[in-house]
Length: 283
Image (cartoon, rainbow, N blue to C red; front, side, top):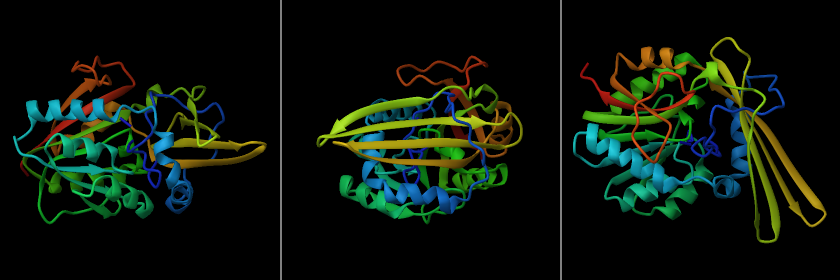
């Protein structure tokens, strides 16, 4: 967002609020390696907040706090997966939570630590992590859950999240249903910063079969007559919501809501984007 986590994961997908959309240009290789994914994010981590300038982090954080008040265990230890530069963590600190963040990219975490000196940040892969002390709330915003680039990794991630939650803890994330993706569509925004013009484009690509989809990203920066461009493609897991519920069921009691951060509305069973509130089951 909700990315993942988050835009990106070394730009964490903790930063691309996509709405079941995809770039018109097809992605030809949804099996790209994670090392390639991280290269663009590492190089462009300084642009992460510009890329996410249109995201309402405050509204998303307040929404999850409301869900936590309804479904949670009443305690305030919080972890943000694919935390990026920490904007959600900043809001949760201000909401009274004891906060931590996990991201795969250290330059992003350096920015997050500067933004949120009260929080603890760790570098790691959310598909397999562990905590010394359980937490009460875990979030994974902006479709970042899809950075687990296959069903096996997604399932390992869910097991790690379950183990990291305290009794009655809640996991909240947003997801896109692979069957609703339209490869003709894209999300874009532009802005001017320090006399430089930036344009960002992003979108999903799904071939129509299998458990892999791709996130296509492009950044253009113009400074006078000079233009720099970056393009990348990120391998991500593709699931429909029926399959997602099956994967969650062993670990969580699941509540699904419409993808609307302004109000709590149960999912209508048809929308291609949804918010999942998952309460830890005893195992």
